[in-house]
Length: 114
Image (cartoon, rainbow, N blue to C red; front, top):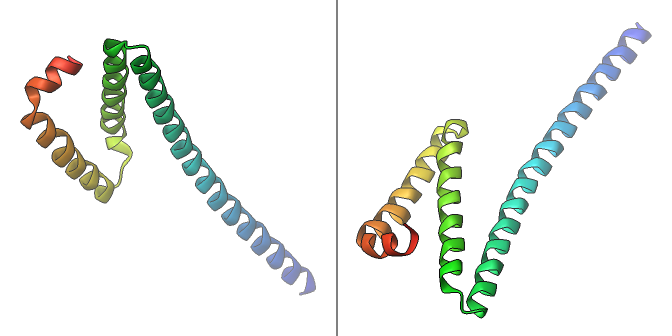
């Protein structure tokens, strides 16, 4: 009887430890990808600023356009892994921000980025 209680407590402790470590690893992994994305965005802006300081406007435009295109591709590639709610949020964001702004200024967007 005593060994069953000890075994049950051991199994419970192992289960809870696994649950807590899985939650922690998930949070660390999610924050690491967000940090990496923020760092990459900062590096892109920094490169564009350096190009503008050197009066190399074409290189700054190319850097920023490549960054925008990369983020659009990331959104497209992540679509299969998103939940329905996240997918609708991304679609609404793309519809509102990308399509409305690009449709209104399509000529300017093409001049700059294409």
